[in-house]
Length: 337
Image (cartoon, rainbow, N blue to C red; front, side, top):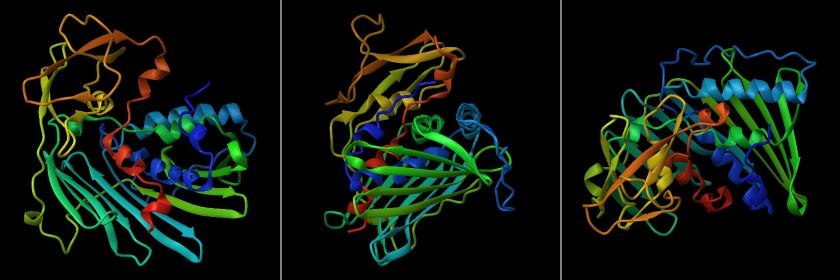
């Protein structure tokens, strides 16, 4: 049951260890069936105290599948940093039925330091990291079809787990002597209720807690006017899905000429037993696209080839969403400045 360890291998210092917090926030953002488990009642899953590491990993496979059925979720991140205790770091809400989502970052004094708000086919970005920046940009018509990002679930499979009371506790020691302890609680319907991350590096330590509620009402942040967010320049590309699934339009990053192939594949429709690969031509000659795509006009067309999935479990491992990329763009110490 070896999983990809692309994230933990990069954790060689305390500041980069804290990226796990932002990563984990994206776990509940998905697009499938309606969910009635709001977790408001505090009804939690009670594991057997004798569960082995392998049994816990098997349960996490089920949790991964259950997370992919979530339609609405609210996430909150709180943490300690230096002398500041229980600081609100980040909030996020997404409602795929309403086609709305919002992620808000908070500074040390509690003020909004940045946000991304998306509604229907348009997104708005506010940032104070390098001076005040405001912009709006188009998102794909397939944006709301994307699947849950469970990259932090992937990384959970590389920890050693045991049961302590009603929680699952995993730990790992990384390059440079940094240590990670993750404590996970599940709802009675076997979805994530909370994740507590304790990271240490030398004499430094940090504790951050993520909490999830499976309902959401994303709203535009108060105190801002949408008319103050100029529309960025973008180019577009058509993606032909094949399998009689039609096509979708994707846009370059704001004021740039690049599109991430992962962002496209994350929004691919579901085809039972098959996985999508992206090509530059309809005959699928040459190698599939595995890097960013440069677009300088609106005339390019890309094509999806569907291939049989050899490993059944890999079918439940969707590509990363743009939300995860935004969360990983800065480490939390940088966000806190």
